[in-house]
Length: 513
Image 1 (tube, helix red, strand yellow):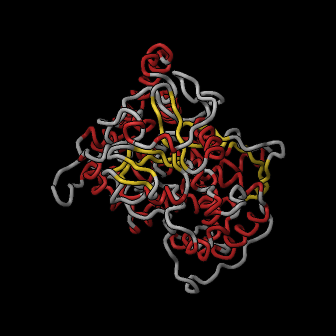
Image 2 (image 1 turned 90 degrees about the vertical axis):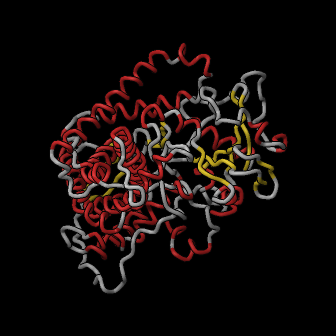
Image 3 (image 1 turned 180 degrees about the vertical axis):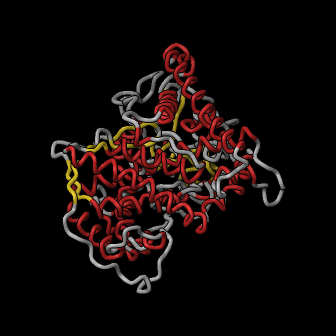
Protein backbone atom coordinates (compact mmCIF):
# COMPACT_ATOMS: atom_id res chain seq x y z
CA UNK A 1 0.00 0.00 0.00
CA UNK A 2 2.70 2.39 -0.95
CA UNK A 3 2.15 6.04 -1.46
CA UNK A 4 1.44 7.06 -5.05
CA UNK A 5 4.26 8.73 -6.89
CA UNK A 6 4.34 12.50 -6.65
CA UNK A 7 5.13 13.11 -10.31
CA UNK A 8 6.86 11.11 -12.98
CA UNK A 9 7.30 13.70 -15.69
CA UNK A 10 7.65 17.45 -16.02
CA UNK A 11 4.20 18.95 -15.99
CA UNK A 12 2.95 21.71 -18.16
CA UNK A 13 -0.69 21.49 -17.20
CA UNK A 14 -1.11 22.60 -13.60
CA UNK A 15 -0.48 25.55 -11.33
CA UNK A 16 2.65 25.43 -9.25
CA UNK A 17 2.48 25.88 -5.47
CA UNK A 18 1.60 29.32 -4.22
CA UNK A 19 4.61 31.63 -4.27
CA UNK A 20 6.64 29.38 -6.57
CA UNK A 21 6.33 29.92 -10.30
CA UNK A 22 9.51 28.45 -11.71
CA UNK A 23 12.62 26.58 -10.72
CA UNK A 24 14.66 29.70 -11.41
CA UNK A 25 12.88 31.36 -8.49
CA UNK A 26 13.47 28.51 -6.05
CA UNK A 27 16.93 27.33 -7.09
CA UNK A 28 19.20 30.42 -7.24
CA UNK A 29 22.11 28.53 -8.81
CA UNK A 30 20.11 26.47 -11.26
CA UNK A 31 22.81 26.86 -13.91
CA UNK A 32 25.00 24.48 -11.89
CA UNK A 33 22.47 21.68 -12.27
CA UNK A 34 22.85 19.83 -15.62
CA UNK A 35 20.02 19.35 -18.09
CA UNK A 36 19.57 17.07 -21.14
CA UNK A 37 21.39 18.06 -24.31
CA UNK A 38 19.58 19.38 -27.37
CA UNK A 39 17.16 21.58 -25.43
CA UNK A 40 14.72 23.27 -27.81
CA UNK A 41 13.45 26.85 -27.58
CA UNK A 42 9.94 27.23 -26.17
CA UNK A 43 9.25 23.48 -25.66
CA UNK A 44 12.34 22.43 -23.69
CA UNK A 45 13.59 18.86 -23.21
CA UNK A 46 11.10 16.85 -25.21
CA UNK A 47 13.40 15.12 -27.70
CA UNK A 48 13.30 11.39 -27.12
CA UNK A 49 10.64 11.69 -24.41
CA UNK A 50 7.58 9.47 -24.32
CA UNK A 51 4.16 10.20 -22.88
CA UNK A 52 3.81 6.52 -22.00
CA UNK A 53 7.05 6.10 -20.05
CA UNK A 54 7.94 9.42 -18.39
CA UNK A 55 9.50 7.75 -15.35
CA UNK A 56 11.74 5.55 -17.45
CA UNK A 57 12.69 8.60 -19.54
CA UNK A 58 13.74 10.37 -16.34
CA UNK A 59 15.76 7.30 -15.31
CA UNK A 60 17.58 7.43 -18.65
CA UNK A 61 18.38 11.12 -18.17
CA UNK A 62 19.50 10.39 -14.61
CA UNK A 63 22.07 7.89 -15.84
CA UNK A 64 23.39 10.45 -18.31
CA UNK A 65 23.37 13.55 -16.09
CA UNK A 66 24.15 12.36 -12.57
CA UNK A 67 22.60 12.51 -9.09
CA UNK A 68 20.82 15.85 -9.58
CA UNK A 69 19.52 17.20 -12.88
CA UNK A 70 16.75 19.30 -14.35
CA UNK A 71 14.26 19.09 -17.17
CA UNK A 72 12.27 21.83 -18.87
CA UNK A 73 8.74 21.46 -20.19
CA UNK A 74 7.65 24.57 -22.04
CA UNK A 75 8.19 27.48 -19.61
CA UNK A 76 8.73 25.41 -16.47
CA UNK A 77 11.87 23.87 -15.03
CA UNK A 78 11.88 20.83 -12.73
CA UNK A 79 14.66 19.49 -10.53
CA UNK A 80 15.21 15.73 -10.06
CA UNK A 81 17.32 14.14 -7.32
CA UNK A 82 18.45 10.55 -6.93
CA UNK A 83 21.91 10.51 -5.35
CA UNK A 84 21.84 8.90 -1.91
CA UNK A 85 23.53 11.85 -0.16
CA UNK A 86 21.10 14.32 -1.69
CA UNK A 87 18.07 12.13 -0.96
CA UNK A 88 19.14 11.66 2.66
CA UNK A 89 19.43 15.43 3.02
CA UNK A 90 15.91 15.86 1.65
CA UNK A 91 14.64 13.31 4.18
CA UNK A 92 15.54 15.75 6.98
CA UNK A 93 12.10 16.61 8.36
CA UNK A 94 13.42 19.76 10.01
CA UNK A 95 14.30 21.26 6.62
CA UNK A 96 12.09 19.50 4.07
CA UNK A 97 8.47 18.32 4.00
CA UNK A 98 6.23 16.40 1.65
CA UNK A 99 5.34 18.28 -1.48
CA UNK A 100 2.11 17.31 -3.22
CA UNK A 101 3.68 17.08 -6.64
CA UNK A 102 1.82 17.79 -9.79
CA UNK A 103 0.99 14.17 -10.61
CA UNK A 104 -0.63 13.60 -7.23
CA UNK A 105 -2.24 17.04 -7.33
CA UNK A 106 -3.97 15.87 -10.52
CA UNK A 107 -5.79 13.28 -8.37
CA UNK A 108 -7.34 15.86 -6.06
CA UNK A 109 -10.52 15.96 -8.17
CA UNK A 110 -10.84 12.27 -7.27
CA UNK A 111 -9.91 12.21 -3.57
CA UNK A 112 -9.48 15.85 -2.52
CA UNK A 113 -7.56 16.26 0.74
CA UNK A 114 -7.28 12.55 1.52
CA UNK A 115 -4.22 11.00 3.12
CA UNK A 116 -1.75 11.05 0.26
CA UNK A 117 -3.14 14.05 -1.65
CA UNK A 118 -3.58 16.52 1.23
CA UNK A 119 -1.39 19.59 1.41
CA UNK A 120 0.58 19.83 4.64
CA UNK A 121 -1.54 22.70 5.97
CA UNK A 122 -4.88 20.93 5.46
CA UNK A 123 -6.33 19.65 8.76
CA UNK A 124 -8.13 16.61 7.35
CA UNK A 125 -4.84 14.76 6.86
CA UNK A 126 -3.88 14.75 10.55
CA UNK A 127 -7.48 14.17 11.61
CA UNK A 128 -7.87 11.08 9.40
CA UNK A 129 -4.39 9.82 10.21
CA UNK A 130 -4.99 9.92 13.97
CA UNK A 131 -8.34 8.15 13.63
CA UNK A 132 -7.07 5.45 11.28
CA UNK A 133 -3.57 4.71 12.62
CA UNK A 134 -4.86 2.15 15.18
CA UNK A 135 -6.32 0.24 12.23
CA UNK A 136 -2.77 -0.75 11.32
CA UNK A 137 -1.63 -1.81 14.79
CA UNK A 138 -0.33 -5.30 15.49
CA UNK A 139 -3.69 -6.34 16.93
CA UNK A 140 -5.56 -5.05 13.89
CA UNK A 141 -3.15 -6.77 11.53
CA UNK A 142 -3.62 -10.10 13.29
CA UNK A 143 -7.39 -9.68 12.88
CA UNK A 144 -6.98 -9.06 9.13
CA UNK A 145 -4.84 -12.17 8.65
CA UNK A 146 -7.69 -14.74 8.32
CA UNK A 147 -9.41 -12.59 5.69
CA UNK A 148 -6.12 -12.27 3.77
CA UNK A 149 -5.85 -16.07 3.83
CA UNK A 150 -9.41 -16.44 2.55
CA UNK A 151 -8.79 -14.13 -0.42
CA UNK A 152 -5.47 -15.85 -1.15
CA UNK A 153 -7.40 -19.13 -1.25
CA UNK A 154 -9.59 -17.70 -3.99
CA UNK A 155 -6.46 -16.82 -5.93
CA UNK A 156 -5.02 -20.34 -5.63
CA UNK A 157 -8.37 -21.86 -6.65
CA UNK A 158 -8.27 -19.61 -9.72
CA UNK A 159 -4.68 -20.63 -10.49
CA UNK A 160 -5.46 -24.32 -9.93
CA UNK A 161 -8.13 -24.10 -12.63
CA UNK A 162 -5.65 -22.46 -14.99
CA UNK A 163 -3.08 -25.17 -14.25
CA UNK A 164 -5.55 -27.97 -14.99
CA UNK A 165 -6.53 -26.24 -18.23
CA UNK A 166 -2.90 -25.76 -19.19
CA UNK A 167 -3.27 -21.98 -19.33
CA UNK A 168 -0.68 -19.43 -18.34
CA UNK A 169 -1.82 -17.02 -15.63
CA UNK A 170 -2.13 -13.26 -16.05
CA UNK A 171 0.06 -12.17 -13.15
CA UNK A 172 -0.70 -8.42 -13.00
CA UNK A 173 -4.41 -9.02 -13.54
CA UNK A 174 -4.64 -11.69 -10.88
CA UNK A 175 -2.54 -9.75 -8.37
CA UNK A 176 -4.87 -6.80 -8.90
CA UNK A 177 -7.87 -9.03 -8.22
CA UNK A 178 -6.19 -10.37 -5.09
CA UNK A 179 -5.19 -7.04 -3.58
CA UNK A 180 -8.47 -5.29 -4.41
CA UNK A 181 -10.44 -8.05 -2.70
CA UNK A 182 -8.06 -8.05 0.26
CA UNK A 183 -8.35 -4.34 1.06
CA UNK A 184 -12.07 -4.36 0.30
CA UNK A 185 -12.71 -7.30 2.63
CA UNK A 186 -10.39 -6.33 5.47
CA UNK A 187 -11.02 -2.61 5.40
CA UNK A 188 -14.62 -2.26 4.34
CA UNK A 189 -16.36 -5.63 4.57
CA UNK A 190 -17.07 -5.60 0.83
CA UNK A 191 -16.67 -8.28 -1.83
CA UNK A 192 -16.15 -7.11 -5.42
CA UNK A 193 -16.32 -10.67 -6.75
CA UNK A 194 -13.14 -10.12 -8.78
CA UNK A 195 -12.28 -13.80 -9.22
CA UNK A 196 -15.75 -14.57 -10.51
CA UNK A 197 -15.37 -12.06 -13.36
CA UNK A 198 -13.75 -12.67 -16.74
CA UNK A 199 -12.87 -8.97 -16.98
CA UNK A 200 -11.59 -6.51 -14.36
CA UNK A 201 -14.20 -5.09 -12.04
CA UNK A 202 -15.49 -1.71 -13.27
CA UNK A 203 -13.95 -0.15 -10.16
CA UNK A 204 -10.52 -1.23 -11.39
CA UNK A 205 -11.23 0.09 -14.87
CA UNK A 206 -12.31 3.45 -13.48
CA UNK A 207 -9.33 3.58 -11.14
CA UNK A 208 -6.85 2.87 -13.94
CA UNK A 209 -8.60 5.51 -16.01
CA UNK A 210 -8.21 8.21 -13.37
CA UNK A 211 -4.54 7.34 -12.75
CA UNK A 212 -3.77 7.33 -16.45
CA UNK A 213 -5.55 10.64 -16.97
CA UNK A 214 -3.64 12.21 -14.07
CA UNK A 215 -0.39 11.19 -15.72
CA UNK A 216 -1.48 12.47 -19.15
CA UNK A 217 -2.15 15.88 -17.63
CA UNK A 218 1.56 16.04 -16.81
CA UNK A 219 2.47 16.07 -20.50
CA UNK A 220 0.00 18.57 -21.95
CA UNK A 221 0.34 22.39 -21.71
CA UNK A 222 -2.49 23.92 -19.69
CA UNK A 223 -3.86 26.05 -22.56
CA UNK A 224 -4.20 22.93 -24.71
CA UNK A 225 -5.74 20.60 -22.13
CA UNK A 226 -9.36 21.22 -23.09
CA UNK A 227 -8.51 20.77 -26.77
CA UNK A 228 -6.20 17.74 -26.65
CA UNK A 229 -7.83 15.89 -23.76
CA UNK A 230 -11.49 16.76 -24.31
CA UNK A 231 -12.68 13.19 -24.79
CA UNK A 232 -10.32 11.86 -22.12
CA UNK A 233 -11.58 14.55 -19.73
CA UNK A 234 -15.18 13.44 -20.21
CA UNK A 235 -14.15 9.85 -19.60
CA UNK A 236 -12.26 10.87 -16.48
CA UNK A 237 -15.33 12.67 -15.14
CA UNK A 238 -17.38 9.51 -15.71
CA UNK A 239 -14.71 7.41 -13.95
CA UNK A 240 -14.72 9.72 -10.94
CA UNK A 241 -18.52 9.61 -10.78
CA UNK A 242 -18.41 5.79 -10.81
CA UNK A 243 -15.84 5.65 -8.01
CA UNK A 244 -17.95 8.04 -5.95
CA UNK A 245 -21.14 6.06 -6.52
CA UNK A 246 -19.46 2.77 -5.63
CA UNK A 247 -18.09 4.11 -2.37
CA UNK A 248 -21.29 5.96 -1.48
CA UNK A 249 -23.21 2.69 -1.89
CA UNK A 250 -20.66 0.86 0.27
CA UNK A 251 -20.88 3.47 3.04
CA UNK A 252 -24.67 3.61 2.85
CA UNK A 253 -24.87 -0.16 3.27
CA UNK A 254 -22.64 -0.01 6.33
CA UNK A 255 -24.68 2.78 7.92
CA UNK A 256 -27.87 0.76 7.30
CA UNK A 257 -26.26 -2.20 9.03
CA UNK A 258 -25.54 -0.04 12.10
CA UNK A 259 -21.78 -0.21 11.58
CA UNK A 260 -21.45 -3.99 11.80
CA UNK A 261 -17.89 -4.12 10.49
CA UNK A 262 -16.05 -5.65 13.45
CA UNK A 263 -13.95 -2.55 13.94
CA UNK A 264 -12.53 -2.41 10.41
CA UNK A 265 -11.30 0.77 8.73
CA UNK A 266 -14.78 1.85 7.67
CA UNK A 267 -16.11 1.40 11.18
CA UNK A 268 -13.28 3.59 12.44
CA UNK A 269 -14.07 6.26 9.86
CA UNK A 270 -17.77 6.29 10.76
CA UNK A 271 -17.70 5.79 14.51
CA UNK A 272 -14.37 6.93 15.95
CA UNK A 273 -13.95 10.44 17.29
CA UNK A 274 -10.54 12.09 17.17
CA UNK A 275 -8.73 11.20 20.41
CA UNK A 276 -7.97 14.84 21.23
CA UNK A 277 -10.59 17.03 19.56
CA UNK A 278 -13.57 14.69 19.63
CA UNK A 279 -14.29 15.49 15.97
CA UNK A 280 -15.55 12.84 13.58
CA UNK A 281 -14.71 12.53 9.91
CA UNK A 282 -17.20 14.32 7.67
CA UNK A 283 -19.15 12.26 5.10
CA UNK A 284 -17.09 13.81 2.29
CA UNK A 285 -13.86 13.00 4.11
CA UNK A 286 -15.02 9.40 4.67
CA UNK A 287 -15.71 9.00 0.95
CA UNK A 288 -12.30 10.40 0.02
CA UNK A 289 -10.45 8.17 2.48
CA UNK A 290 -12.31 5.04 1.34
CA UNK A 291 -11.43 5.71 -2.30
CA UNK A 292 -7.84 6.42 -1.26
CA UNK A 293 -7.50 3.12 0.56
CA UNK A 294 -9.22 1.10 -2.15
CA UNK A 295 -6.94 2.60 -4.81
CA UNK A 296 -3.64 2.93 -2.95
CA UNK A 297 -4.34 -0.19 -0.90
CA UNK A 298 -4.31 -2.47 -3.89
CA UNK A 299 -2.67 -0.73 -6.85
CA UNK A 300 0.88 -0.56 -5.52
CA UNK A 301 0.82 -3.89 -3.67
CA UNK A 302 -0.33 -5.71 -6.79
CA UNK A 303 2.61 -4.23 -8.67
CA UNK A 304 5.06 -5.26 -5.96
CA UNK A 305 3.77 -8.85 -6.01
CA UNK A 306 3.89 -8.96 -9.80
CA UNK A 307 7.50 -7.80 -9.98
CA UNK A 308 8.48 -10.24 -7.23
CA UNK A 309 6.87 -13.16 -9.09
CA UNK A 310 8.63 -12.11 -12.29
CA UNK A 311 12.02 -12.21 -10.59
CA UNK A 312 11.27 -15.49 -8.80
CA UNK A 313 10.38 -17.10 -12.12
CA UNK A 314 13.64 -15.85 -13.68
CA UNK A 315 15.84 -16.87 -10.76
CA UNK A 316 15.07 -20.51 -9.90
CA UNK A 317 17.88 -20.61 -7.35
CA UNK A 318 16.26 -17.76 -5.43
CA UNK A 319 12.85 -19.41 -5.73
CA UNK A 320 14.23 -22.70 -4.43
CA UNK A 321 15.81 -21.00 -1.44
CA UNK A 322 12.63 -19.06 -0.66
CA UNK A 323 10.52 -22.21 -1.06
CA UNK A 324 12.82 -24.12 1.29
CA UNK A 325 12.31 -21.43 3.90
CA UNK A 326 8.53 -21.67 3.54
CA UNK A 327 8.72 -25.44 3.94
CA UNK A 328 10.96 -25.11 7.00
CA UNK A 329 8.91 -22.43 8.74
CA UNK A 330 5.39 -23.53 7.82
CA UNK A 331 5.94 -27.25 7.31
CA UNK A 332 2.74 -29.09 6.53
CA UNK A 333 0.61 -26.56 8.41
CA UNK A 334 -2.50 -26.15 6.32
CA UNK A 335 -3.13 -22.57 7.42
CA UNK A 336 -0.08 -20.50 8.39
CA UNK A 337 -0.61 -18.30 11.41
CA UNK A 338 -0.02 -14.58 11.61
CA UNK A 339 3.27 -14.97 13.48
CA UNK A 340 4.60 -17.49 10.94
CA UNK A 341 4.49 -14.91 8.16
CA UNK A 342 6.92 -12.64 9.99
CA UNK A 343 9.39 -15.54 10.14
CA UNK A 344 9.69 -15.75 6.34
CA UNK A 345 12.76 -13.55 6.37
CA UNK A 346 14.22 -14.62 3.03
CA UNK A 347 10.84 -14.33 1.28
CA UNK A 348 10.68 -10.82 2.68
CA UNK A 349 14.13 -10.11 1.20
CA UNK A 350 12.82 -11.20 -2.20
CA UNK A 351 9.98 -8.71 -1.86
CA UNK A 352 12.31 -5.94 -0.72
CA UNK A 353 14.67 -6.55 -3.64
CA UNK A 354 11.78 -6.42 -6.11
CA UNK A 355 10.71 -3.13 -4.50
CA UNK A 356 14.26 -1.87 -4.77
CA UNK A 357 14.48 -2.43 -8.51
CA UNK A 358 10.92 -1.37 -9.28
CA UNK A 359 9.34 0.57 -6.42
CA UNK A 360 5.75 0.67 -7.54
CA UNK A 361 5.44 4.25 -6.29
CA UNK A 362 8.67 5.26 -8.03
CA UNK A 363 9.16 8.84 -6.83
CA UNK A 364 8.20 11.34 -4.16
CA UNK A 365 8.58 15.12 -3.93
CA UNK A 366 10.00 17.22 -1.10
CA UNK A 367 9.84 20.96 -0.58
CA UNK A 368 12.05 23.21 1.52
CA UNK A 369 10.50 24.41 4.79
CA UNK A 370 12.94 27.31 4.85
CA UNK A 371 15.88 28.67 2.87
CA UNK A 372 18.57 26.01 3.04
CA UNK A 373 21.46 24.42 1.15
CA UNK A 374 21.02 20.91 -0.22
CA UNK A 375 23.99 18.64 0.58
CA UNK A 376 26.06 21.74 1.30
CA UNK A 377 26.18 22.58 -2.40
CA UNK A 378 22.84 23.67 -3.87
CA UNK A 379 21.01 26.68 -2.35
CA UNK A 380 17.26 26.13 -2.14
CA UNK A 381 14.70 28.76 -1.23
CA UNK A 382 11.70 28.14 0.99
CA UNK A 383 8.86 26.49 -0.96
CA UNK A 384 11.09 25.18 -3.75
CA UNK A 385 10.83 21.48 -4.37
CA UNK A 386 12.47 18.57 -6.13
CA UNK A 387 11.40 15.11 -7.14
CA UNK A 388 13.29 12.20 -5.57
CA UNK A 389 13.53 9.41 -8.15
CA UNK A 390 13.22 6.39 -5.88
CA UNK A 391 13.81 3.97 -8.74
CA UNK A 392 17.23 5.58 -9.31
CA UNK A 393 18.03 6.10 -5.62
CA UNK A 394 17.67 2.33 -5.33
CA UNK A 395 20.25 1.94 -8.10
CA UNK A 396 22.86 4.38 -6.79
CA UNK A 397 26.16 2.48 -7.24
CA UNK A 398 27.65 4.39 -4.29
CA UNK A 399 25.18 2.52 -2.07
CA UNK A 400 24.26 -0.65 -3.94
CA UNK A 401 27.52 -1.35 -5.76
CA UNK A 402 28.43 -1.62 -9.44
CA UNK A 403 25.95 -4.47 -9.92
CA UNK A 404 22.98 -2.44 -8.70
CA UNK A 405 20.84 -3.58 -11.65
CA UNK A 406 21.23 -7.23 -10.61
CA UNK A 407 18.47 -8.94 -8.63
CA UNK A 408 19.97 -10.15 -5.33
CA UNK A 409 17.78 -10.57 -2.22
CA UNK A 410 20.86 -10.92 -0.01
CA UNK A 411 21.24 -7.15 -0.23
CA UNK A 412 18.62 -7.20 2.52
CA UNK A 413 20.16 -9.62 4.98
CA UNK A 414 20.48 -8.05 8.41
CA UNK A 415 24.22 -7.37 8.18
CA UNK A 416 23.93 -5.64 4.79
CA UNK A 417 21.01 -3.50 5.99
CA UNK A 418 22.93 -2.36 9.07
CA UNK A 419 25.95 -1.42 6.95
CA UNK A 420 23.98 0.57 4.42
CA UNK A 421 23.59 4.35 4.54
CA UNK A 422 20.24 5.48 5.98
CA UNK A 423 17.49 6.78 3.70
CA UNK A 424 18.77 4.78 0.72
CA UNK A 425 15.71 2.46 0.51
CA UNK A 426 12.43 4.37 0.27
CA UNK A 427 9.66 2.36 -1.43
CA UNK A 428 7.05 3.82 0.93
CA UNK A 429 8.06 7.47 0.88
CA UNK A 430 9.64 9.17 3.85
CA UNK A 431 8.96 10.96 7.09
CA UNK A 432 5.67 11.93 8.67
CA UNK A 433 3.78 11.40 5.41
CA UNK A 434 5.17 7.97 4.57
CA UNK A 435 2.62 5.29 3.70
CA UNK A 436 0.32 4.54 6.66
CA UNK A 437 -0.47 1.06 5.33
CA UNK A 438 3.04 -0.21 4.65
CA UNK A 439 2.89 -2.97 7.30
CA UNK A 440 -0.44 -4.15 5.88
CA UNK A 441 1.08 -4.33 2.39
CA UNK A 442 4.23 -6.10 3.55
CA UNK A 443 2.34 -8.72 5.55
CA UNK A 444 -0.12 -9.36 2.72
CA UNK A 445 2.59 -9.64 0.07
CA UNK A 446 4.86 -11.87 2.16
CA UNK A 447 1.95 -14.18 2.99
CA UNK A 448 0.88 -14.47 -0.65
CA UNK A 449 4.41 -15.14 -1.92
CA UNK A 450 4.81 -17.86 0.71
CA UNK A 451 1.52 -19.51 -0.26
CA UNK A 452 2.32 -19.44 -3.98
CA UNK A 453 5.86 -20.76 -3.53
CA UNK A 454 4.60 -23.60 -1.37
CA UNK A 455 2.02 -24.61 -3.97
CA UNK A 456 3.58 -23.98 -7.41
CA UNK A 457 6.70 -24.01 -9.50
CA UNK A 458 6.76 -20.81 -11.56
CA UNK A 459 7.80 -21.14 -15.21
CA UNK A 460 8.45 -17.99 -17.27
CA UNK A 461 7.74 -17.47 -20.93
CA UNK A 462 11.28 -17.65 -22.41
CA UNK A 463 10.40 -14.97 -24.99
CA UNK A 464 9.12 -12.46 -22.43
CA UNK A 465 11.19 -9.36 -21.74
CA UNK A 466 10.19 -7.17 -18.83
CA UNK A 467 8.19 -4.14 -19.91
CA UNK A 468 7.08 -1.66 -17.29
CA UNK A 469 3.74 0.09 -17.66
CA UNK A 470 3.35 3.52 -16.02
CA UNK A 471 0.13 5.05 -14.69
CA UNK A 472 1.62 7.06 -11.82
CA UNK A 473 2.39 3.64 -10.37
CA UNK A 474 4.44 0.88 -12.04
CA UNK A 475 3.32 -2.59 -13.15
CA UNK A 476 4.90 -5.31 -15.32
CA UNK A 477 3.15 -5.27 -18.67
CA UNK A 478 1.99 -8.49 -20.30
CA UNK A 479 3.54 -10.75 -17.64
CA UNK A 480 2.23 -14.30 -17.82
CA UNK A 481 3.60 -17.35 -16.04
CA UNK A 482 3.10 -21.08 -16.50
CA UNK A 483 2.48 -23.15 -13.39
CA UNK A 484 3.45 -26.61 -12.25
CA UNK A 485 2.06 -28.15 -9.09
CA UNK A 486 4.75 -29.05 -6.58
CA UNK A 487 5.23 -32.73 -6.01
CA UNK A 488 7.52 -32.73 -2.95
CA UNK A 489 5.94 -32.57 0.47
CA UNK A 490 7.10 -29.85 2.86
CA UNK A 491 9.12 -30.81 5.91
CA UNK A 492 7.89 -30.50 9.46
CA UNK A 493 7.77 -26.89 10.56
CA UNK A 494 10.47 -25.40 12.77
CA UNK A 495 9.50 -24.94 16.36
CA UNK A 496 8.12 -21.46 16.81
CA UNK A 497 10.09 -21.20 20.02
CA UNK A 498 13.46 -21.40 18.26
CA UNK A 499 13.37 -17.81 17.09
CA UNK A 500 11.14 -15.05 18.30
CA UNK A 501 8.82 -13.88 15.53
CA UNK A 502 9.11 -10.30 14.46
CA UNK A 503 7.00 -7.84 12.59
CA UNK A 504 8.08 -7.32 8.98
CA UNK A 505 10.84 -4.72 9.16
CA UNK A 506 9.70 -1.32 7.94
CA UNK A 507 12.26 0.16 5.56
CA UNK A 508 10.97 3.68 6.19
CA UNK A 509 11.93 5.79 9.17
CA UNK A 510 9.01 7.59 10.74
CA UNK A 511 5.29 6.98 10.65
CA UNK A 512 2.30 8.38 8.92
CA UNK A 513 1.13 8.25 5.35
